[in-house]
Amino acid sequence: MNTYPSDLLVDSRWLVENLTNSNLRILDVRGMGYRLGHIPQAIALDLGRDFFIFAGRTVSSAPPEHIAQALSKLGVANDTTIVLYDDTNDQPVALAYWSLRHIGHRDVKILHGGFIGWRNAGSAVSHDVPSFTPSQYRPQINDDLVASAEWIQANENRADVLLLDVRSYGEYVNGHIPHAVNLPYDSSLNWQTMFFREAEKLRAQFESVGATPDKEIVVYCHTGMRSAHAFLTLSLMGYPRMRNYAGSMADWYETRQLPIE
Image (tube, rainbow, N blue to C red; front, side, top):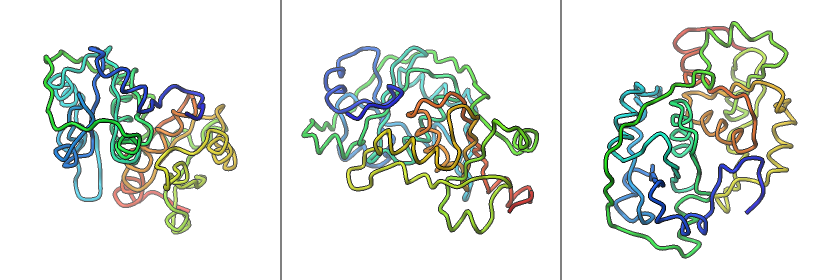
């Protein structure tokens, strides 16, 4: 596997070798795809029911105690190693990752290449639904990973803060938060292989817009889904200070009607 600054990604071989680890929980966030076959020992996590509230075009986090209750039912404890996967390392797995980081879970990994990569590697597929003893999960909220409109307005003149708009270029030029730079979120993936691009390419992309590790990077999109993926990519690259503006443009402009450029 390509070497990245963090150990966030695991490959199919690593997962096969760790399937019997009693402190491991594999969470499948594909929705209906789980019923058609999944990784052995994986359990389904319903993002719309357990982690987020989807209302029209907006996405907001469920209350921490609601998320903790869902994790407890799945047998996830605070020290559990969680491996997340969707089909292709796209927005669902990123939303789950950001939410887990926000409630303070530290040991979270991503299956590189997702379920498609797992199948392409010739790994086994199961239809059995495992069960685990419920736990008592206790969230430890980390609001340093969250940005709000108020936070952005209070910190917009700081030289060490960079606003990163990860929507398409067309969306960006049609109006964005003042001073934001643009880097579409999907530039981080090789869409033929469904793997993240090489570390050197990711680093060059971020640095080309001024997103360097010495800055506090605030990512946003329209509803907080693509920005969650950018948050994941920055984590992969070892960036120490990141915030996701989950409300994004739906909150900034459509709800609050704040200034745009």
